Each structure stands twice: as C-alpha cells, then as structure tokens.
Image (cartoon, rainbow, N blue to C red; front, side, top):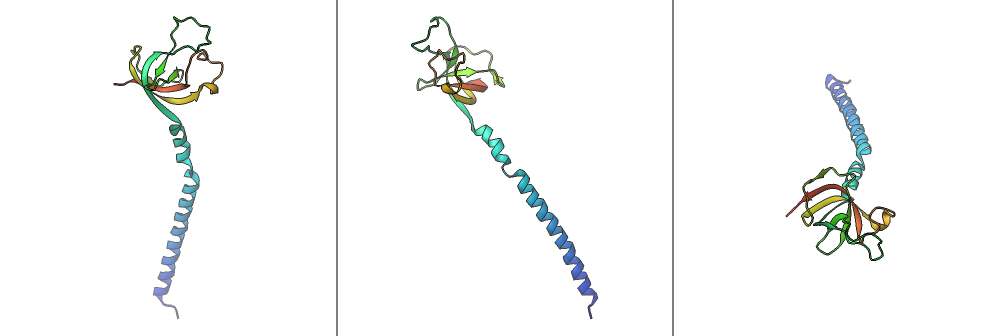
Length: 138
C-alpha cells in the first residue's frame, strides 16, 4: 500500500523533470541561435587593418602621364610602402592634418589589383585603405 510520502516524491520528481526539460530546450535553442554569432561580428573586425606612417603625396608610377605638380594624399609607412586613402566611408578623422604629419589609419585594405580603374591607378601604391578612422599620432 502506497503511503503519502510516495505521492509527494512523484510530484516532486515530475516538477523537476518538467523544469529540466524546459532548461534543456532553452540551452539548446540558445546554442543554435547564437552559434557563430561571434564569427559574424569578429570577421568584420578582424579584416580591418591599422597602418601608421606619414601623411604625404603619393609617388607617381614611372609610366604615368600626369603632371608632377599634382598631389594625391596617402600614407607612407616607415618601410617606404605607400597606400592610397579612400575616405568615402570615413567615420572619424582629424580635419587639420598637414603633409608629413604622423597618422594612424584604420580600415579595410584592398590590394591595388582589387580596385582597377580607380583614381589611384597612376600612383605607385601597395594598396588602398578604405578608411574608417584617420587620426594624428606621435
């Protein structure tokens, strides 16, 4: 003959099983929903690059037909590499920069071959930086 204590144990077990099933469903749903979310966010951040150097005129290619007095501004790194600056998507910039100021540029780096027919095709550059931030540094 079952006693009152047996009924209480069954009710307690049933309530805990229901909560355990609900908790498991929430965890599984959460894992499925957010799995890979950090990859989407970090992929965009990880593909950005920061380049430091001097704000200077880009050198013309030897085969360029432009006049020598034109100055297309870019960044020249300490190793002598030159990068064009695409500021069409800029979010944060110093507006009082002068030629030869030391700057740090953060953005997406495109090789020169990834952007053929651009305004920088006559310049001797290693790439084009689609700038997000451009700041003066020391």
